[in-house]
Length: 275
Image (tube, rainbow, N blue to C red):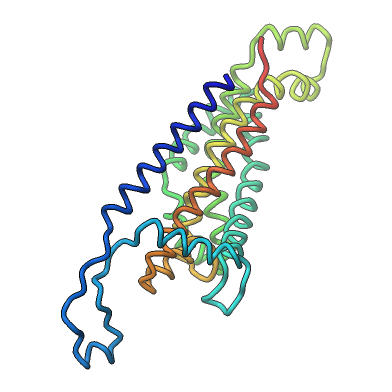
């Protein structure tokens, strides 16, 4: 297994080097055009046409940004660390609120066929609605962009956790429940000592799906509400026509999303069991 992991790592590095090399080769600096007129110089014209920056230029910009990630030079000029911190705060707040609702409710649905049949129509109607479709209504009712963004994270995070919890609870082996009844355990003890450990891997899978969706949605939500956050940072840098910052922020979004997924994957391994 160690040999396989090492070979996979080496292959990943080779693929990365080839991709960066191809990107660099496909973005040569354009040849200088004719001299700019006096008017073009006054208007801030450039002697190079707009193009996607090569990876060497993006990496240089990334080094500058990461050297001082927490600077604060005003409302529209904050470091990447501050922007990511705002986004993570919104994501984790909405995500944890969703977990507090979805997991207990999922237990109720999974353990009660009556509750499943009663609530399933509502779940099936609300689940396919795009989280961003809730944003105008949230802004109107809550009247606060920060809380509205958190509500959007809440509404997009709740469904995978709710459905996976209900599925995991409903599919706990029947003989385990019978053993608990034989030992005269109460329903509460049965839920905590038998059902919860058995359903934990499925619940963690739902939580892992939810955190990925929440991180996707926060970028779009922050583009709408503005102010702070990695989504606003991307949109603001695009408005400034700074493609170096746009590409750098895209990479940071991917890295943070990967770290969030890895964290929950590590937690999921702790609750796995073999029958």
